[in-house]
Image 1 (cartoon, one colour):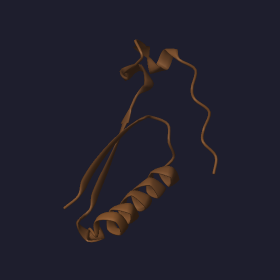
Image 2: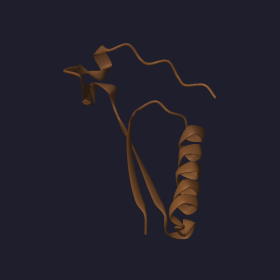
Image 3: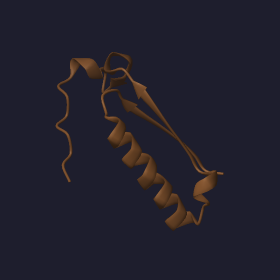
Image 4: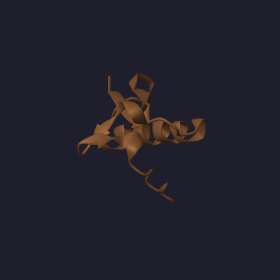
Length: 69
C-alpha cells in the first residue's frame, strides 16, 4: 500500500493537484508494479509564511516562476 505525503506551498489549482495524483499513481504502478486501488496520495498545502528555506521565510522571497510544459 503506497502512501505518498506531498507538502507544497499553497496556491496550486485543483487541476494541478489532480494531475499530480494521477501521475504519481501512474509512476508507482509502472516502476514498482503497485496496485492503483491501494495507492494513497496526500497533498498538504503549507502557507508561504509557514515555510522556511535558506534561512528565511518563503513568503519573504520572490515567488518562483511557474514551470511550463
